Image (tube, rainbow, N blue to C red; front, side):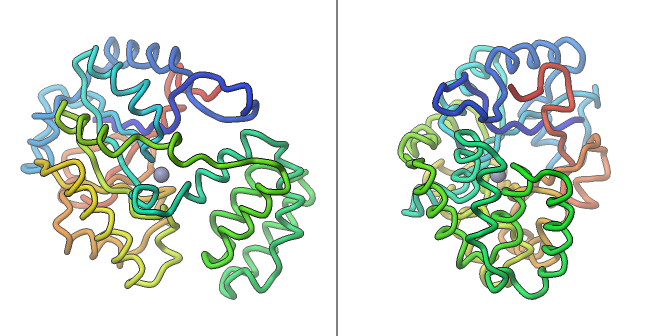
Length: 309
Ligand SMILES: [Zn+2]
């Protein structure tokens, strides 16, 4: 089986000229292609795999996953899946629903969508001083900085600095300072799927999974902080989306560097049935027993029609 990961699926917005998203037209084309070339894993088949390790009779089929609960998942993706008789797994960071506002990861997306990457990176480098970088990361940070200066820095450097290197305690302040100076305002109420819509999607056969509270790089956090992120998001999902037949989680950012052994132990302790990572390979019969909390998943851009606009 192949699990496919999507983020933004939407139309072009003139106020975000550099925003990276999958156009809804290309999303439809990609679904057409998956239907033709691979087929889709049914919810019952996936349940069977999670519970017993049994693969579908046709092992090459596709599972669809959508990260971060952006409003386009309700307005664009959900109707498209319903119209096709498909289901998907939607991973929700719950902080925006409990008072955290727009999450840092999404503030960064909006800044990069609205402004020139090099200008953002230049200003962020001025604002982030060495003491805002945890000691263990400083050497890594200097290397990256040096490489970036040679290679005309931009969006990836800006994201790396404010997602990975900077200490969580300074992150929101620096991002908001940049946003203020560049004239970007954040509107969390319009950005995410409404809470009531998540329950509606669950009733219509979608699986709603946890994606932490604040979408941090979990491997940067102490075990107790990780526990709050995992238990907090699972609890909110249970309450809001209602009881579901599978308990699922997805690692923020993904990749084996983004979580650690504590994360996996916490997921086991919380009775999570399966978790998705980002690793571009097929899911095989052994994965659910061998590494249920790091199931592999492809970015949609690795398949036809999946490239961002
Ligand atoms: Zn995410």
